[in-house]
Image (cartoon, rainbow, N blue to C red; front, side, top):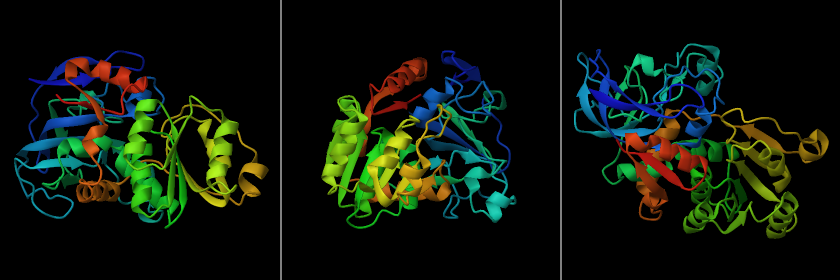
Length: 364
């Protein structure tokens, strides 16, 4: 029997259930789980803040494992087109089932909006099998995009950023961060910290991280942020004044929202200079509403705003190789605050929700 942590319904505690070892269909892959991240999205799932979740689920949408078995038939290929074999350490795109035929997949080139899109650990039910990372094994259905980890990238290092890195890579790419830009990052969780790193790699002249608590701001400073602003010790007016003082009165060239807090959005608009660029990536789940002045905050400012929801296989692939390339410059694993087995998955969720940790991992 195989053990997995299961969220039966919103506002219920995680429980450990047993599953039979699956029989692989042709083209499928069975991973023995090395680790899976605990993401802010997982805390939102416990509150029922995302539509279309088929509870019960096995949480865990970004995971790493060792290939234990490959289904029969034609070779199963990785993203580079190479055959996968038992013993390889791999990760995979959590999004599964994009149709490749609808308007969003073909004309709109926005695969994250495909109506057939499903997500491991989020919108695939535990009643269908081992389809989330908080389990001893993960069943990868035929067609899942699989990315081997380079030998120089430790699996814990990749998970230390988790979905934060591909999500941030998507956001920073949309933001078109240029050499010398001042970039404000709202939020010091894994997405915000990853965005701060990637902004530096794209040539930002100044990176300012606005967030908290202290453990996360310390991580931001360690990973190269020029200035950190503690939201617990400042109000909105003070934060605006501080950013303006650091930017010759203008505001940031680019602001990236990575908080998940709706009220951060109008504040971020005001932290950005006239004719600047603002990317909202933190509002992945429905946490409520916020209001802004369309004239003062958007139109008169000539502000460019991008919504950024999720990531695709290109973002995961590039994240793996960026993290491998810069593993010496950035001590990724130092972002990991705790590792938890399946029996203590609820403790991991509680610690992430209370922001007592930077990154928590489930290690079955």
